[in-house]
Length: 556
Image: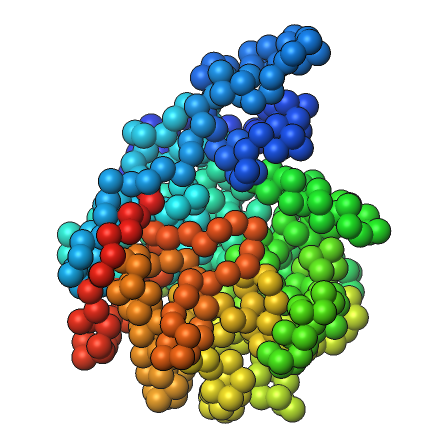
C-alpha cells in the first residue's frame, strides 16, 4: 500500500468510531413543533432551539407534542423545557487577567475554544467529528468552515501542531462523509458549504510540518466535484446549483444552498423578511441561504437595489430609510470574485499534487481548468476604469458597482496579474483603507458585512496578497492599523470580538462592530488567529505591550 493509501486507511479507521451520520435537521425532526417554537418566539435567538439537546428520542417528543398541544392550558415553553436541555450562552469561568499582554491572552484562549468529540451530546443537531476542533466562541459553539482556516493561522507553537492536524482530519472526514464541508458541523448547515479553503488548510499544515499535503488529494478532488456538480452538459447562459456556464462556454461558480426554506437557525428573521416583499418566498430563502454560504451574511454586496458609492451617500440612505432591503437579495445571480479565486486555488493545488502523484493527465486537466478560470476572472471581474476586481451579475451581464474587500482575494491566491496588483493597491488605499484597517465594503449599511465594520479574515488576505505582490507599504499599514484596533479594545474591555468598527481610535475610541441579526460576539476564533499571526510578523508593534484593564469574561 502506498503512503497516501495507508494514510487514508488510518483516517477511515479513526472516523469509524463516529456514529453513523444523521442528516435530519430540527425542522425535519420536529415538524409542527419546530414551527410552533420558532414562530412563537419561545427563545429570543432562533439558534437556541435548533441547538437544544433532546432528553428522549425526537420521535417520542413529537408524538407527545401532538398528543398534548391541543389540550387546554398547554404551555409550549414549559413543554420545551421539559423535553430539551437548553444550551444557553453561558458565562465562562475564564476571565481575562488584568495586566496580561494580548498575545498571552490569545494563547490562553485556545483551550477555552477547543471542543472534543467525547462531549458531543446524542440526538442533537451537532454532527459528530472524530477529532478535537476549535469553535469561534459566543453563540457559535460548533466548528465553522472558512473561519477555521484563519483561526488555525494563530496555532504557531509546536505543542499546537496536533490541533492543526486534527482540524484538517475533521474537514477531510466531513468531505468523505457528506461530499463537502458543511457551513458548520450542525445538521441544519448540511445544505450549504462555505468558501472552499480546504486547499489552504492542507497547505498551512504542510508548512507547519504536521502532514504531507499529497495525502489529501482525494478530498481536494471531492470538494472540487461538489462545487462543479451540474456543469456537465450545461448549456451556455444556464446555471445549475453552484455552476454557471456563460456565453462562450466559460464556467464560473456562485454560492447556493440546496434548500429554499427559512434558515432554521434564523427562522423568524427569514419569515419576517419574506413577509415584507412581494417576491417568491422560495427564491428569497434560497438567496438568503446562499449568502450564508458566502460567509458574508449579510451585505449590500448581495442586494439588487442600487448601491451607494460613498460613505456619505450610504449614511443618507440609512438615515432616510432607503438603504437596500434584505428582501432584494439576489446572491444566486452573482458570480463572486472571492469564490472563484478560492476555486482557482483549489484547481491549482489539485494540479500540483496530481503531478507529484504521477497522474499527469489529471495534472494537465486541472491546470487547464485553473488557467481558463483565471482568464475568465480577468475578463469579467477586472474593471480597467476603476482598477479593481468587482463581482459579476450574470443575469444582467454586467459588473456590480460596490467595491468590496473581496477584491483582494485574487492576489491572495495568486490569480492576479502583477500590473493589476499594483493598480489595486492604489484603489484599496484610496477607497477601502480606514483608520482601523481594511473596510469590508465601500457601501455603508446596517448589515454587518458592510462599512464601517472590519473583519480579521479580510485583513489577512489583504496583507498577504499585497505583500506577495511587492506592495509592502500597504500591507504593513493594514497590519499596523488592524493590530492597533484590536489592541485598543482589548486594553479597554479585556477581550477580542468577531468584528470591529474601523473608526479613528484617537477621536472616538475603538468599538466592536455592529449590525447583523445577533449581538456582537466575543471569543473569538478568527480574530485570535489572525491577530496572533500578525503579532508574530510585527514584533515591534505597540500592540505587544497592550494589557487588559478589564476582567470581562470570555464565553465558552
